[in-house]
Amino acid sequence: MSVCPSCEEPLEEADRFCGACGYDLSSTGRPPRSGAQDAGRDAAEEPAAASVEEPASVEEPASVEWPAAPDLDSSDLPAPVHLPTDLRGTDSGGSELPAAVRIDGPPSEEEFRIAAPDPRTATPEELGAATPPAGTKLCVACRAGHVDPDGYCENCGHAQPRERDHMEQELGAVAAVSDRGLRHHRNEDSFVISSAALPDGSAAVLAVVCDGVSSATRPDDASLAASRAATEALHEALPRGTHPQQAMHEAIVVAAEAVNALADEPETAREHKPHQNAPACTFVASVVTKELLIVGWIGDSRAYWVPDDREAPAARLTEDDSWAAQMVAAGLMSEAEAYADERAHAITGWLGADAYELEPHTASFKPDRPGVVVVCTDGLWNYAESVDEMARVLPTDAASNPLHSAQVLVGHALDGGGHDNVTVAVLPFPVPQSGAGSA
Image 1 (cartoon, rainbow, N blue to C red):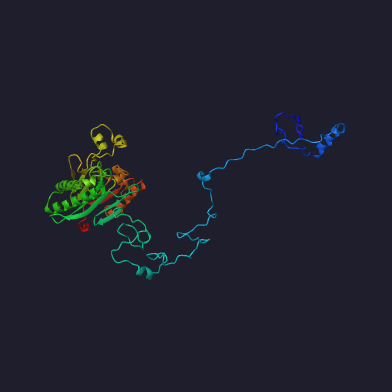
Image 2 (image 1 turned 60 degrees about the vertical axis):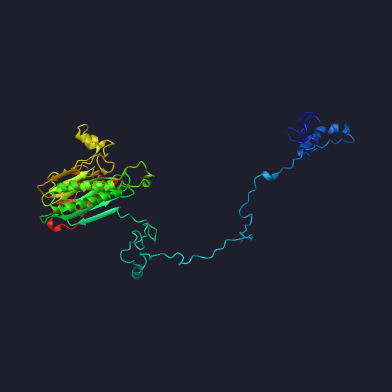
């Protein structure tokens, strides 16, 4: 055939299918045509149809043998994917599982009974029956559950704040407040306020404030040990008639020995942190009598003097053991330049086994007018560094209300960012003899 019987497209000799319409050229007979095609072709072929004789028979072409697909071994093919509903599961014994999940009903109230009554809805009788024995610590969140030894509420599971996260104490004419701050995970500061009787029968009020060095190990233990040891030393020396300034010097030496003792740990305790520094802290303290004002310090914790008459000048009573202070003292930098440097707060003096030679600083003053002494860590003075700033932040009634004044100063540091632990003690001068408490 030279043309396709279906569409009359020219064909090649080896074609088995029409390249235009796909007609199978090996099949017999003519394909059906549409009415329009039949009419057109019949009109064109009608004269020739009478003179052309159809062959008696047409030889059938041989059928095409298509290759058969070989049998494949499907053992190494991935298993077919089934939906969970296509297969019925069985239990561990081989029995069929039920068609639907069984629901036993809502849980009983006994299964989820709260250990303590809800204080928002409980009656006074229920709260009274649930009141724990005296001395039991209640949760600060729900105010109903007991706190377990690990520091968590047995009722609501709330973690309780540590005892040293926020501390306040008022003792007659002296008060102190310490707070963890907003960035630290624990409070590494420590303070002790107390009063001691002098040989003449008058009272001396004292405050010791220590700031643990965060880069050292156990800084909170170091500050606690130093503050307690120094206070005990002052209470032993002052009643014997030791001059307050000499007593302060001896107290700093005793505090240093207490911190040094913390470094005497077994080797097994240092295996996990072999390169960590020994426990260390800074120190500042003040002793106020009816005539004298004594301060002692090591490190960068400070003491400020603020007179009741704010027209009179305030003063800073301590000098920092820091890189910035050394640069200013040597005349290499101005104070503004030194404290703007990133090394400004690197301390050069501290209490600890790895400290340089211990050089306690003490000073004695005899103010000519009443006022208050502010003893604080750098967590406060970073936000009120100059004496004018400290005097401006301190309430004017600080001498008569030291606790409120200490709270205001700590709040000022927290409002400023609270990047460090904040501790401040406020001591009025002279000491009101009727307001001095006992240690």
